[in-house]
Each structure stands twice: as structure tokens, then as C-alpha cells.
Image (cartoon, rainbow, N blue to C red; front, top):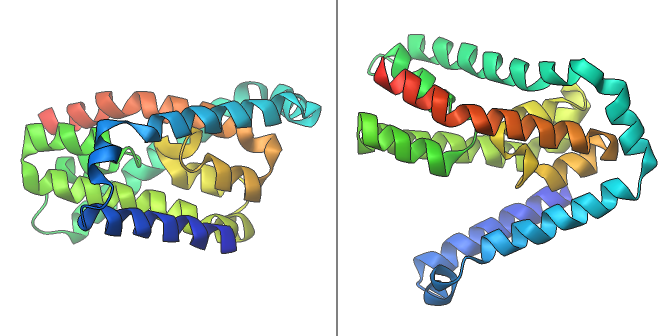
Length: 200
């Protein structure tokens, strides 16, 4: 839990620095986030390659590994459909389009803004950021209450990058490959599902 709070503090510090226009020119001129992601993925690769138990765990998963992203996609869309019943001002397809972002806020919000307008695009941005924050902060509780696959499913498209460190820490190294595979499949589905729900 302590590490999740540290991550949240760094996020809030970034918001405050950007809001106060401190270091903003340097950060926007150079895309440091991509370089940090490259380093993160390199270190994760080193960690996996150094641990033979992880590779053994992947062999044991076999075809069952496909059920994890499938469950995330179907579960999220079912939840989004239920939310549409409660929200009187939004249609079923609006809620499904927002849910189909699966935490990929940068891409989903752009698509939804283009097809449905800035208001729903902003809702999509907020909803998907909140999904990522819940995973980052709640990973230890999700593992404790629902099992080691819970933070992977909650993380959606972010499980191969931003939420991977907390998933690795609380679910264990044996779930790293599952997490990366899950993130890749869910990430790949976002542009197709979001545009599909925006168009119907």
C-alpha cells in the first residue's frame, strides 16, 4: 500500500508542476515518459529472464491465458451496460464506448471526442484515468479480496506498462507475462471497440 501511495504522490506532484507551468517547456519538448517506459520494460524483461519460475508459469498457462483479457473485455462491457441503466442522460452505446477505453485514456478520449463530442470525451478521459488510479492504489486490496488476477483485470489496457510494476509486486513475478499479454490484447481491442460503439 505504501508504494501505491508513493506512486499517487508522484502523480499529484506532476499535476501540480504542470498546473504551475514549472518545467513544462522541458517536459513537453522531450517525451521523457516514453524513455521511462522503455527502461521499465527493459528492467521487467531482465527480471523475467532471470527467473525461470516465471517461464515455467507461462508454460502452465497454455491456452487458458486467453480467458484473462476476454473476461476483462466482457466484464467491463457488462458493467458499462449496467451503468447506462442508472445514467438517464447517456445512451447504452455512449456508456459502452467509454467502458471500451479499458484504461487507455489517451486514445479512447480522442476517438470519443471526435465521434461524440468533447463532453463525452472528457467523461472517457476521467473514467479511464480513475480506472488506472484504482489499480495503482488498490492492487494490494484487489489481490487480497479477489485473487492475483484481479489487479490485471482491473488494470485493463495499462497492464503491460503503467500498472505492471504494482501488479508484479502484489500478484507476483509469475503473473508478469500474463499481465503483459493481457495488456497487449486489451490495448489492441480499444480502437476497434470504441469506434464501433461510437458509430452505432
